[in-house]
Image 1: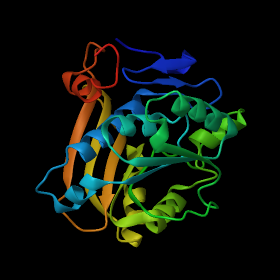
Image 2: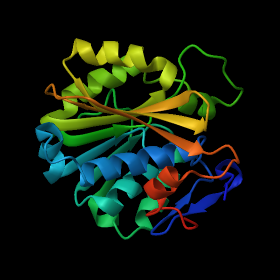
Image 3: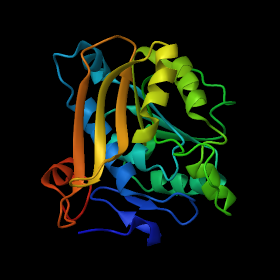
Length: 254
Protein backbone atom coordinates (compact mmCIF):
# COMPACT_ATOMS: atom_id res chain seq x y z
CA UNK A 1 0.00 0.00 0.00
CA UNK A 2 1.55 3.28 -1.11
CA UNK A 3 0.62 6.36 0.94
CA UNK A 4 0.67 9.96 -0.24
CA UNK A 5 2.17 11.54 2.87
CA UNK A 6 2.38 15.04 1.41
CA UNK A 7 -1.39 15.43 0.82
CA UNK A 8 -2.39 14.30 4.31
CA UNK A 9 -2.80 16.78 7.16
CA UNK A 10 -1.90 13.95 9.53
CA UNK A 11 -0.45 10.46 9.43
CA UNK A 12 -1.50 7.70 11.81
CA UNK A 13 1.18 5.28 12.98
CA UNK A 14 0.56 2.22 15.14
CA UNK A 15 1.42 3.94 18.43
CA UNK A 16 1.25 7.66 17.67
CA UNK A 17 -0.11 10.23 15.25
CA UNK A 18 1.74 12.99 13.41
CA UNK A 19 -0.16 16.15 12.48
CA UNK A 20 1.55 18.25 9.83
CA UNK A 21 -0.76 21.13 8.99
CA UNK A 22 1.85 23.88 9.48
CA UNK A 23 5.17 22.19 8.78
CA UNK A 24 6.67 22.99 5.37
CA UNK A 25 8.18 19.53 5.01
CA UNK A 26 5.75 16.69 5.62
CA UNK A 27 6.19 13.12 6.76
CA UNK A 28 7.92 11.16 4.00
CA UNK A 29 8.87 7.58 3.26
CA UNK A 30 12.53 8.64 3.58
CA UNK A 31 12.12 10.05 7.07
CA UNK A 32 10.09 7.06 8.28
CA UNK A 33 12.69 4.66 6.95
CA UNK A 34 15.52 6.63 8.54
CA UNK A 35 13.85 6.85 11.95
CA UNK A 36 13.06 3.16 11.97
CA UNK A 37 16.59 2.22 10.88
CA UNK A 38 18.22 4.27 13.64
CA UNK A 39 15.82 2.99 16.31
CA UNK A 40 16.48 -0.56 15.16
CA UNK A 41 20.27 -0.22 15.06
CA UNK A 42 20.51 1.46 18.47
CA UNK A 43 18.06 -0.86 20.23
CA UNK A 44 19.44 -4.02 18.56
CA UNK A 45 23.09 -3.19 18.03
CA UNK A 46 25.77 -5.75 17.25
CA UNK A 47 27.18 -6.73 20.65
CA UNK A 48 30.56 -7.46 19.11
CA UNK A 49 30.86 -3.81 18.07
CA UNK A 50 32.12 -2.07 21.19
CA UNK A 51 31.41 1.42 19.82
CA UNK A 52 27.75 0.76 19.16
CA UNK A 53 27.46 -1.35 22.31
CA UNK A 54 28.35 1.71 24.38
CA UNK A 55 25.27 3.42 22.96
CA UNK A 56 23.15 0.67 24.51
CA UNK A 57 22.51 2.73 27.62
CA UNK A 58 21.77 6.03 25.90
CA UNK A 59 20.14 8.38 28.36
CA UNK A 60 19.99 11.56 26.27
CA UNK A 61 19.03 11.94 22.61
CA UNK A 62 19.00 15.11 20.50
CA UNK A 63 17.13 15.56 17.21
CA UNK A 64 18.49 18.53 15.24
CA UNK A 65 15.81 20.05 13.00
CA UNK A 66 12.99 18.01 14.51
CA UNK A 67 10.26 19.21 12.13
CA UNK A 68 6.96 17.55 13.09
CA UNK A 69 8.66 15.52 15.83
CA UNK A 70 8.45 12.31 13.80
CA UNK A 71 11.97 11.04 14.59
CA UNK A 72 11.58 11.80 18.29
CA UNK A 73 8.39 9.75 18.44
CA UNK A 74 9.89 6.85 16.48
CA UNK A 75 12.91 6.72 18.79
CA UNK A 76 10.83 7.12 21.96
CA UNK A 77 8.77 4.09 20.95
CA UNK A 78 11.83 1.81 21.05
CA UNK A 79 14.48 3.49 23.22
CA UNK A 80 14.11 4.31 26.92
CA UNK A 81 15.82 7.70 27.10
CA UNK A 82 15.24 11.40 27.59
CA UNK A 83 14.80 13.04 24.17
CA UNK A 84 15.15 16.62 23.02
CA UNK A 85 14.36 18.17 19.66
CA UNK A 86 15.28 21.61 18.39
CA UNK A 87 13.39 23.32 15.56
CA UNK A 88 13.81 26.78 14.03
CA UNK A 89 10.59 26.99 11.98
CA UNK A 90 7.63 28.21 14.05
CA UNK A 91 5.00 26.26 12.11
CA UNK A 92 6.86 22.98 12.32
CA UNK A 93 7.53 23.58 16.02
CA UNK A 94 3.82 24.07 16.66
CA UNK A 95 3.02 20.79 14.91
CA UNK A 96 5.78 19.00 16.84
CA UNK A 97 4.54 20.39 20.14
CA UNK A 98 1.01 19.11 19.53
CA UNK A 99 2.28 15.71 18.36
CA UNK A 100 4.51 15.24 21.39
CA UNK A 101 1.83 16.33 23.87
CA UNK A 102 -0.58 13.82 22.37
CA UNK A 103 1.88 10.93 22.71
CA UNK A 104 2.36 8.53 25.61
CA UNK A 105 6.04 9.58 25.78
CA UNK A 106 5.40 13.29 26.37
CA UNK A 107 7.11 13.19 29.78
CA UNK A 108 10.37 12.01 28.18
CA UNK A 109 10.46 14.48 25.28
CA UNK A 110 11.40 18.17 25.43
CA UNK A 111 11.17 20.58 22.51
CA UNK A 112 13.35 23.64 21.96
CA UNK A 113 12.22 26.47 19.69
CA UNK A 114 15.39 28.01 18.31
CA UNK A 115 18.50 27.88 16.16
CA UNK A 116 20.89 25.02 16.98
CA UNK A 117 23.80 27.28 15.98
CA UNK A 118 22.89 29.82 18.65
CA UNK A 119 21.23 27.83 21.41
CA UNK A 120 23.26 27.25 24.60
CA UNK A 121 23.11 23.55 25.40
CA UNK A 122 24.01 22.50 28.94
CA UNK A 123 24.92 18.85 28.36
CA UNK A 124 26.11 16.34 25.79
CA UNK A 125 24.21 13.49 24.15
CA UNK A 126 24.77 9.77 23.60
CA UNK A 127 22.79 9.90 20.35
CA UNK A 128 22.35 12.84 17.97
CA UNK A 129 20.06 12.33 14.99
CA UNK A 130 19.33 14.64 12.07
CA UNK A 131 17.50 14.51 8.77
CA UNK A 132 18.94 17.82 7.54
CA UNK A 133 18.00 20.03 4.56
CA UNK A 134 18.78 18.10 1.41
CA UNK A 135 20.23 20.57 -1.01
CA UNK A 136 22.77 23.37 -0.96
CA UNK A 137 22.89 26.07 -3.68
CA UNK A 138 20.06 24.42 -5.60
CA UNK A 139 17.01 25.94 -7.29
CA UNK A 140 14.68 27.52 -4.72
CA UNK A 141 10.89 27.41 -4.49
CA UNK A 142 8.71 30.47 -3.88
CA UNK A 143 7.77 29.26 -0.41
CA UNK A 144 10.26 30.56 2.15
CA UNK A 145 9.44 27.94 4.77
CA UNK A 146 9.87 25.09 2.31
CA UNK A 147 13.17 26.58 1.14
CA UNK A 148 14.44 26.64 4.70
CA UNK A 149 13.31 23.05 5.27
CA UNK A 150 14.71 21.62 2.05
CA UNK A 151 17.80 23.77 1.43
CA UNK A 152 20.57 24.08 3.99
CA UNK A 153 20.73 27.88 4.03
CA UNK A 154 20.35 28.24 7.81
CA UNK A 155 22.26 25.05 8.67
CA UNK A 156 24.82 23.78 6.17
CA UNK A 157 26.13 20.23 6.26
CA UNK A 158 29.52 21.47 7.50
CA UNK A 159 27.85 23.51 10.27
CA UNK A 160 25.79 20.50 11.31
CA UNK A 161 28.91 18.35 11.69
CA UNK A 162 30.62 21.03 13.76
CA UNK A 163 27.62 21.30 16.07
CA UNK A 164 27.54 17.53 16.48
CA UNK A 165 31.23 17.55 17.39
CA UNK A 166 30.51 19.97 20.24
CA UNK A 167 27.43 18.17 21.57
CA UNK A 168 28.23 14.47 21.10
CA UNK A 169 29.40 12.43 24.08
CA UNK A 170 32.74 10.62 23.76
CA UNK A 171 30.92 7.30 23.47
CA UNK A 172 28.07 8.79 21.44
CA UNK A 173 26.59 8.00 18.04
CA UNK A 174 25.69 10.50 15.31
CA UNK A 175 22.96 9.38 12.89
CA UNK A 176 22.21 11.30 9.71
CA UNK A 177 20.52 10.78 6.35
CA UNK A 178 21.46 12.75 3.23
CA UNK A 179 21.21 12.39 -0.56
CA UNK A 180 23.72 9.77 -1.68
CA UNK A 181 25.47 12.21 -4.02
CA UNK A 182 26.65 14.18 -0.96
CA UNK A 183 28.27 11.16 0.70
CA UNK A 184 31.88 12.14 0.02
CA UNK A 185 31.22 15.70 1.10
CA UNK A 186 29.88 14.48 4.44
CA UNK A 187 32.80 12.08 4.92
CA UNK A 188 35.24 14.92 4.27
CA UNK A 189 33.60 17.02 6.99
CA UNK A 190 33.48 14.21 9.54
CA UNK A 191 37.12 13.30 8.89
CA UNK A 192 38.13 16.84 9.86
CA UNK A 193 36.86 16.30 13.40
CA UNK A 194 37.67 12.59 13.82
CA UNK A 195 34.14 11.25 13.56
CA UNK A 196 34.41 7.75 12.12
CA UNK A 197 31.89 5.94 9.97
CA UNK A 198 30.44 2.92 11.76
CA UNK A 199 27.67 1.93 9.40
CA UNK A 200 25.91 3.14 6.27
CA UNK A 201 22.85 2.00 4.35
CA UNK A 202 22.12 3.05 0.78
CA UNK A 203 18.42 3.49 0.01
CA UNK A 204 17.10 2.63 -3.47
CA UNK A 205 13.61 3.79 -4.33
CA UNK A 206 13.01 0.89 -6.73
CA UNK A 207 14.62 -2.41 -7.61
CA UNK A 208 17.29 -1.88 -10.28
CA UNK A 209 17.59 1.82 -9.53
CA UNK A 210 20.43 3.85 -8.06
CA UNK A 211 20.78 4.89 -4.40
CA UNK A 212 18.90 8.12 -3.69
CA UNK A 213 19.56 8.48 0.05
CA UNK A 214 22.14 7.10 2.44
CA UNK A 215 21.75 6.63 6.20
CA UNK A 216 24.90 6.91 8.32
CA UNK A 217 26.05 6.12 11.85
CA UNK A 218 29.25 7.82 13.09
CA UNK A 219 31.22 7.40 16.31
CA UNK A 220 34.35 8.69 18.03
CA UNK A 221 36.40 5.50 17.55
CA UNK A 222 37.44 3.55 14.48
CA UNK A 223 35.62 0.24 14.04
CA UNK A 224 35.10 -2.11 11.13
CA UNK A 225 32.54 -0.33 8.96
CA UNK A 226 29.31 -2.08 7.94
CA UNK A 227 27.74 -1.17 4.59
CA UNK A 228 24.30 -2.35 3.48
CA UNK A 229 21.50 -1.31 1.13
CA UNK A 230 17.72 -1.39 1.15
CA UNK A 231 15.23 -1.27 -1.72
CA UNK A 232 11.89 0.38 -0.93
CA UNK A 233 9.80 -0.96 -3.83
CA UNK A 234 10.15 -3.94 -6.13
CA UNK A 235 9.61 -3.93 -9.89
CA UNK A 236 5.82 -4.08 -9.38
CA UNK A 237 5.88 -0.93 -7.18
CA UNK A 238 5.09 -2.93 -4.03
CA UNK A 239 7.02 -2.50 -0.79
CA UNK A 240 9.83 -5.06 -0.51
CA UNK A 241 9.89 -7.56 2.34
CA UNK A 242 12.99 -5.82 3.77
CA UNK A 243 11.19 -2.48 3.87
CA UNK A 244 8.09 -4.04 5.45
CA UNK A 245 10.20 -5.72 8.12
CA UNK A 246 11.94 -2.45 8.97
CA UNK A 247 8.68 -0.45 9.23
CA UNK A 248 6.36 -3.11 10.62
CA UNK A 249 6.45 -1.69 14.16
CA UNK A 250 5.31 1.71 12.88
CA UNK A 251 3.11 1.49 9.78
CA UNK A 252 -0.53 0.53 10.34
CA UNK A 253 -0.85 -1.61 7.24
CA UNK A 254 2.31 -3.70 7.46
